[in-house]
Image 1 (cartoon, rainbow, N blue to C red):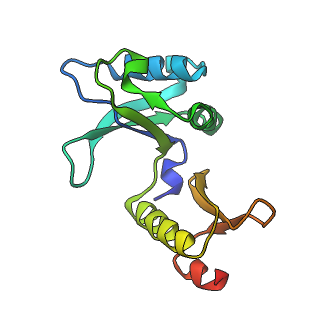
Image 2: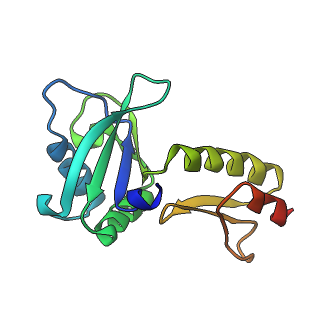
Length: 153
């Protein structure tokens, strides 16, 4: 299931507006990030409901995984993106991430809690995989399952 989402990006924090054009929103975000691609690089863009919230995420499915990775990397490099940056008058913070499955999101939450308790310095997601690193000089470890955490203690 996660493999099917490798070309997807999840955008959280963009308020839903009546008669919105998702392609225009994505273009505004990409322009702010300094990433260029054409509409032809996008297979599909849609809104999906968020569990336990009235908010709806924007999911972008790119034809090419490299375009998707460039888009996510640019968002991480910018560090802070606000709805006002893309012409929306609300001051919501916008988050651009890999589109994880529910199981992967739950695992990420567990890994963050575990890593904080074990004094790991870094936790991140790249290529839809959860990475942890204890310190600047320690090796990067990819966590696939909760059982992997038991191997690290």
